[in-house]
Amino acid sequence: MKDPYSIIRSPIVTEKSTYLNAEANKVVFWVDISANKSEIKKAVESIFNVKVTAVNTQRVPGKVKRMGRFSGRRPTRKKAYVTLREGDSIELLEGMKA
View 1: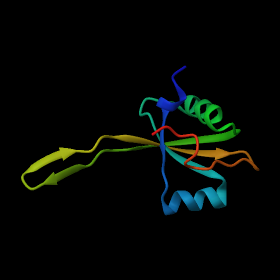
View 2: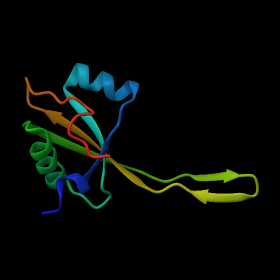
View 3: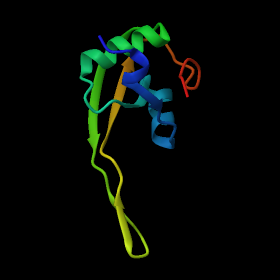
View 4: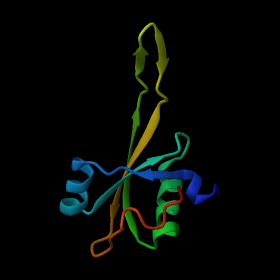
């Protein structure tokens, strides 16, 4: 198994993710592009000591960005929407490595 901290990159703290956390007990993370749902589930459970009931993933394609005549491309990333068991919660910024 991979290192859990290499699978879970960082939490996503936006208005939408905060709303999901409050209403549906879901937490959103940026994860490794090659990680599958079972690896993400095991990583979240081992890092935060919670029980995960479901994991939904979404690939976010990279965009082309320009700065004057120079153009570059943002990398393709992967989001994971992690549903926690009723009663479990995660303090978003605790337990994450920088």
